[in-house]
Image 1 (tube, rainbow over the protein chains, first blue to last red):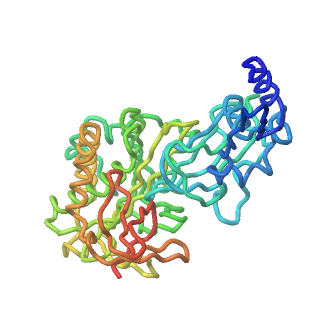
Image 2: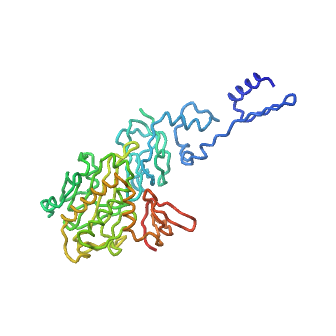
Image 3: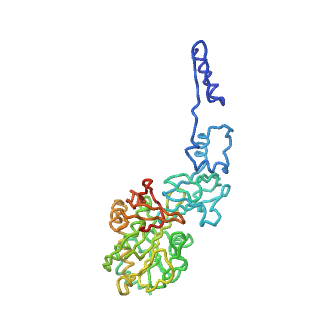
Length: 154
Length: 257
């Protein structure tokens, strides 16, 4: 099989939506496949919030999800948990959340509380911006440095 | 009335309590230190109130304390080097300071309940609540709020753990000024130790906890977990050995079952 033919084939395949391609010609067989990306499956918190999040511009219907995550990470300001604990979006179970998606925030705006071992840690925003994503469900455990919010800086 | 002269003579610290704020009555000493409009940012600032109208514990539980009989105070920590270390060690250190102060001054045996309650004969003598503010990704301000039952002679009402006071346990009234100074002196020593080698704090804490190795239950809201209090992990979280394996506990009310 001609090397240039294979090169062209790979290029076309790469630009297409096809995930598997197999060609057989004169007893020679070539198989090309795209590796399935599974970042969503490994980030359950992300999945649970992706429906209500503002999807970044340019995402195609079958867009590679991992790239969307990477893209949003580079685009948005992220708030991470400074401690291991439990994430609370509301000051008390009956109260409204401190912030919701779409809310405009400023340095000093309280975003959430993380609780661990009789420590209540209030997290304040450090930029001017808009809440784009809330990455964790209320009352769920969070790890050190886990992303809690994505904020579009304004 | 709290005597500043007596307190000052006994205070032997470099930074804790050198900025001292006193109030007859306040909603909560933690809130007062964290309130931005009060503009209190000095590392080691202490806020003592004779009466808290909204003193609280975890889960917004009320901390009740009679006026001028007990100690309700908070300490502010803004030292960045200290806040970078695990705050859990400061949490344990606060309980150790109270426990050691009581044993040093009155020779009364205390024990610690995870994470930071101080007990005498299984009754609560002190509760501690920490509150912090982080801006973006780092903690900028921490307040450690202490409630110590000193000279209160009756505890009407219902409690999660039955309270006691030093007056009950020692059999006489004790000096609040002397006790506060001793707690602050010891807490400063502990903070210096945390900066040098935090693992020693865990060792000291474990030596004063009689629940390790015991069957316990951990209650959080309506959820109860049972198991053996196996140990603390390196960060101070409780390791609960259950029939399904080891579970790391971040918070909850621990009771020997």
